[in-house]
Image (tube, rainbow, N blue to C red):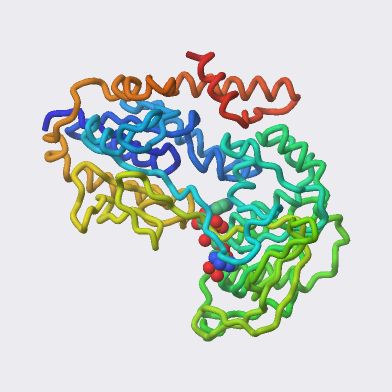
Length: 461
Ligand code: NAP
């Protein structure tokens, strides 16, 4: 089989990089040459912009991902958004298909799910993903401002993102200085006065989505303690008996029970884990900003869900973070299942009207929805690559432009003044972040805005 098989992977987060890895590490013809495109000038997706800055061990995964991007048959091509065909400043899905034998979309699930309750968008109410983006220095979040000089915050949802944002609200500045959080976020979080963080689940603890390691970590901050109410720890009767609980729910139950039984530690901040409370409305004060969240108490319905009891509770809060999951968004020109928030596919092959679309594939959250840990993306990417390689004969027969796709991409973007950022540009950003850290007497500090990132990339050439 002749080659090389030219593949564009759209998105340089874990699913995109695992896809590139599976493509270039396989033995035998045809060899694949992979361009990993990203709309940002920086690679690594949620590993850079989602994994909490104080999770150094997970962050070190970047070194593994980096080795893939340094492979001789892989090129990182940042600052290339995918938009509509013919649109200025972006490349369309049809245009990509004209440049590559195959395109694998690994664009994740960048939006937040909505609660659909009154007051959701009042000043002071944010999606937790915005808060995560802000302390992770995502350039689209540079202008966000969070009211941290307040007493009480409510986090709605009990997944791992909820645990991350609660921990960040309860952290002191000293604990964050050794991370790469941008300087403005470090100062704002350090000056923060939030002393009550309520993390609220609509179902019971046995249905919580957080994992035990992350849950335990909440109680390791020097100035904060976790508070749990014993009367909210009932196991879900749908499990029949406690032995039927999934292992993670059993481990979580043991941790929560221990916290519920202990005497108060008297620390300055409290993270209050609450259960069986369904959000009904975010309430505004006289100035219009958030003052409380109104919840309805729920009870198990015997089938794993809950029913309302008609009893209500208001939790005062001047800051609300809605942490109810991510949501995929459609890409122009690609089919989309709006209910699932994913692209319809069969083993990674994009389906148009039920039939595989030649040359188009998906992997990661846009394929299977926003669940699982980083490692879940590896088998997911491998499945897609198996499908792609099984199609290789037909893919190599597709008409694609003879030019180097990277040159063609530059040409497409030139009229808008947008310049792709290659690997050297990214190394320039890394060097600039090291330098910024030195000036601030910290380790590496992230550059939080587009201008700074692109200027650092340009300087590196
Ligand atoms: P998630 O795990 O899906 O949790 C979402 C939470 O929001 C659930 O408690 C859910 O409750 C609740 N929820 C959804 N709709 C709601 C509504 N209308 N009203 C009230 N509550 C509602 O989502 P996530 O925390 O954003 O995490 C996304 C993925 O990233 C997960 O796979 C997670 O494990 C992963 N992640 C991992 C780490 C880590 O490993 N350290 C860190 C961050 C994220 P119900 O269950 O009742 O629907």
